[in-house]
Image 1 (cartoon, one colour):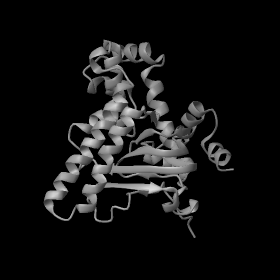
Image 2 (cartoon, one colour):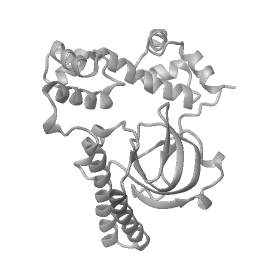
Image 3 (cartoon, helix red, strand yellow):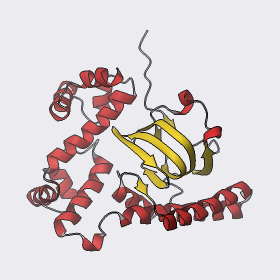
Image 4 (tube, one colour):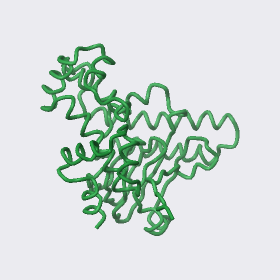
Length: 285
């Protein structure tokens, strides 16, 4: 009998109606048992968390964070995460699909992803707390198209506040040098096309640049050439699939755009420093 494959679980935030919008407050006593929610997963939408009280330990794409309240966490749908532990937890969680998101926001969210959680000062925390509490009240009253529209607008406004908070942690576009601007544009293209495009020249063509100039810009900003970033983005996704799913190496390679899976295995070994199946065994023990 063939082995049953278990892909990385995708959480839809209990949105059984398919509205694409959700918000709720979770407290320690309302959380289900650890085995029900403490599993590695992705979300099918952009997700935001306002940590009101307590602390939480999370692993996000193989980086472990101990987050103390007050803090805000944004997670891109691509990211795989797992809750390790928490203490006296109170959190407001909201999520929005791309379809329901303000059209200006997807590009901005790509710009800030991936990013570490942000610790909040008292003033910023109060602002987010009041805005999210209002969204919860609107969600409770949502019974007609008027409230649907108001809820969507307010939840997008809340997402906009988080974008502003994260953006304040990084240089604005106006302050970027030309190489920084080019590198930022390359990273955005890479996030969208890494499973399909593996050639530095193709990324340069998409950005209307020469391959040489793109490489110079990226290397001057990051210290590494374009090919390095392409390979490491692919291998990060491979690690996610090898660690969090039971897909075979051949299936993982195919999902990432490689028909020649022996070549993919060699690439993984070169970038990660160990063979893919060794990585899987080592990290599952």
